[in-house]
Image 1 (cartoon, rainbow, N blue to C red):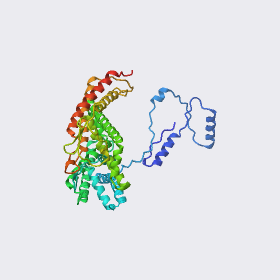
Image 2: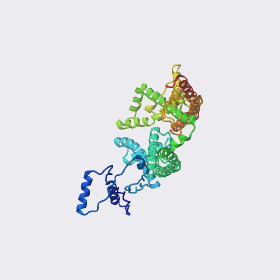
Image 3: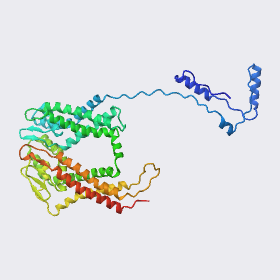
Image 4: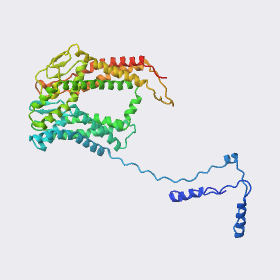
Length: 478
């Protein structure tokens, strides 16, 4: 029987390797038993032609013989070495992604301001770009000095757009530098720091551009705000890009991990309830809102600009409504308060968003609104238990099986959700307020400490009760 040819010396040649492989497959069949007539005829013909005849032997093949035979490894074609993927330098990738994120968040502001100013003939493109840049910096929480005082009430809808674009920037830079799905926290931090540093430099330069008569901006304050916002937004994206966030979550204890998730859900439920109440109150006061818009005799473009400004501050109104539902309420000027049991306000700006303010304290029926945060906590706790008892694959198990959650896990996760929700709602209350001048409108928004403390108690207790109720009344399916 012919043997397998050896690998050619020049094994790097793909054609030589392929030829050797082909020869290895061209083997002759093994004759089993007695030679056939065809073999005899071939032997006689070979003798007549003078060729050397090979001795034909009968080979007996069985399992034992096959098992003792030496295994021959056939030569395989080598694959060409893969070229390493090109990776962008971190400073270059961070600079490009940061500038792109800033441009995408600035263009909508400049477009709205430019449309209103151009159609109404109150300035050219340069003036619109300057005013839009001032409004864009206000979205970063940078106070703008004006003739009536400092403007520091940031439109949270614009702030959310800014943070989202920075989040995408962190994710894109993580991919560009080759750190995607590495699980490295240090690389995620380096990406976020590079973006934040670039964003801070950009903010300080733009502050010098905006600073002037009627729009006074401090470059140092702008650099600090831009750095903090850039770090927070890009860090969320870089942690997701490197999967470091999943690594952190996997290392947390079970009650803490589930409690954080439940607290975030409870806070979102309360904010959603605030948004629903805000929309309903503005809808009920639609006539008053229309009168406020028509009071601005600036034409269609100007009225559209006022409407868009009100929408930009709609997220602020949702946070204020959430504080109203929790009990502390919010202020619309120094010495004013708007809560369920008391409404004390003075002259207010003519904004459609303020058309939904209550005219006075709510009666007994209005106090039912206080039950909305409690229902939000109960719903978050119920979802916690449903998630824990859901049929899923355990680590190292091949089949799924229902499991009954232990009481310490249920109650502990529910109670931990309270402080998490309190911190989130307290931060939202802090960012939603700010001054609108140096006079009476210098104090606007809810008290973050009161909102955070009440949210911690209300949502913590209600989430634990909702989780316990679901644990008692829900029977796992066998």
